[in-house]
Image (cartoon, rainbow, N blue to C red; front, side, top):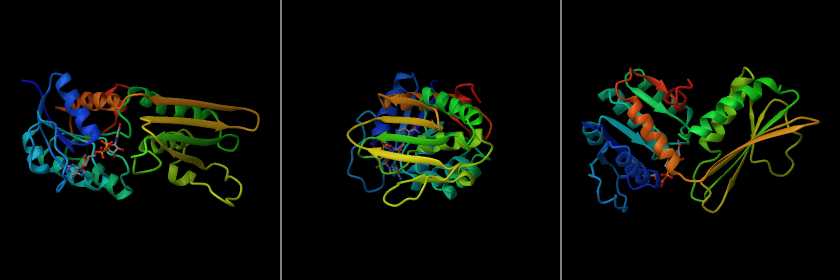
Length: 259
Ligand code: NAD
């Protein structure tokens, strides 16, 4: 029997693509949920479920690309039922991320800032570049651009890139410090910090550039997503991979065998 995959936020932009990709992968759509009180209609072919509890009960694995405020609730349900969860929502606070990590002691959870394979390769390269280009000599700056509807900044992927750079330099993003939203009399750039700039406009799916700027050279790496479907395909791949895995917090690197 094909895997039964449930989708939280089925009427969202990602929710709709996920529904299509579940079917394309030959899996079964167990059903989807909507935000309570929303006027949006789900895609006609998807069984609508009343709430997240019903979603977990009906599914072998749940995919959640909704809103940060419900990530901890969905992770707790995964822990309670032992069902795997693929979590793609961005903008989680440190406390919400901690709740997800806690839940992953009792259920397999795959949490990734970006489910595109190319981006995950980008993260691995970013870490190696940062290790080779010392913070005292090379300023790391991350520039991202997304569609005008995006509600959080910097993007989850930009933050993941920042973390990869920090890791490569043997520190954490919090310890290295960040600079973002520069405006007016900012003072000189602080050595060792990681800079973020967020551009918003049009329908840009997702662009990320990582720059290492030294006194005499500058190297930049760019990744562009042309179609949001790449995230949905990757998330469904992660969902199928997660079935039968022991509890733990996994990333897309693990799914791709790069962990
Ligand atoms: P969207 O606003 O189009 O869709 C989100 C949907 O979730 C909405 O329909 C909303 O009604 C629904 N929702 C909110 N709370 C809910 C709840 N409690 N129960 C059920 N549904 C609920 O947004 P989107 O563009 O589809 O993105 C969704 C999230 O996924 C964002 O956080 C975005 O940044 C993230 N995202 C991650 C990746 C990745 O690869 N990790 C890729 C794309 C988007």
